[in-house]
Image 1: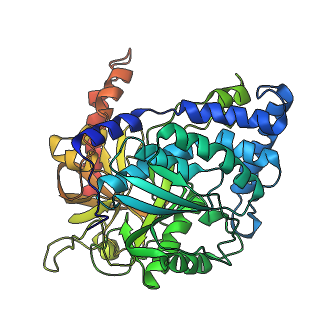
Image 2: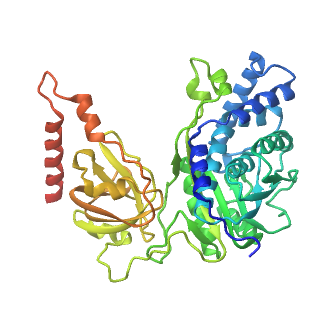
Length: 473
């Protein structure tokens, strides 16, 4: 085959791992500052320039986080794109880099790929993809960008050629097309179509309309191509993506990841707030200048958290595991009847640890439920038998024996409480290879034995007694 699927060799994988561990992109940061000076005809750190960027960042965030019909996202005027480049773009480039690297490592990409970057902005996804390929000389890419905002196309034309030149010659990007994808799709066939933080901005479409758009975009995929949709991790946008994904599946698309079809029935969990997390990036020089000493929290944006879905048209899924019909594993669709009882479950791990200092907590799903369910493990109950869950990568499938079912009225969700008798094992997926923090040790070091004789061990006994008491009810 002239263009086979590509598997990175050991040297390339090592180089890729090193690249992703670097949480800063100096070349991009430098070009951002030079573009600010080009557009404003002033020094980037001129206080007038900084104040206008601050104002634009604040206004953009205010409009971005509005919900429903009140939401309106537009990029008009020079400072709209400068604020995006200052506050959102650095983290988004790292997000796309790591996400795309995972697709490459999974063997989903061919030696030469044709990419469609939808809603390309100033080049976020294009730069992220080219950055990865800069350390994989065996692969090449031809990238077509679509962007309807003039200000973003101008920034793309400045940033992307310079960044791609610094990355080497194995990625090429065409001049961005001025198209409104809700009305017109570009010609061609693509191995990867990526919509990075753009679907939520299409406020002219409702969720059904967005699902129809994804189906339409899928007609531009090659026979084994991937359509990737990345969205912010906040409640409104992340849960909307899950709803849109379900609708797209009903219209004929296959969800490759992260959702697993463990039971072979439609998943109806709502709301489903699930997202991927990567390591924080290093703040840029511009972020520090905008935030100063008093407002770092407003203008320093280092989180890399996002919700995603990958769609295909050939039926291929990342995880093909199905829970056997005769397996003695409780269905989450029937969780209510098990309240107050101990059960065995097999579930997908749909979050990183989202617990507090005293508990490990993971969103769990078997594809059959309608109410959110969480695996909860008190830190003082952790044993080696829990490590399969604590180190499971996002989307992996684990079997967990002996969990106590409790309903959380406040959160309108079920907690599957684990104890020392609970046992976990990996069924499908991979381990992160990173040990989970020892929260029990941290608590003991923090509180120790005080003047009143309070010791962590005493807190542990009280906690164990409370769990036993709940179990007797």
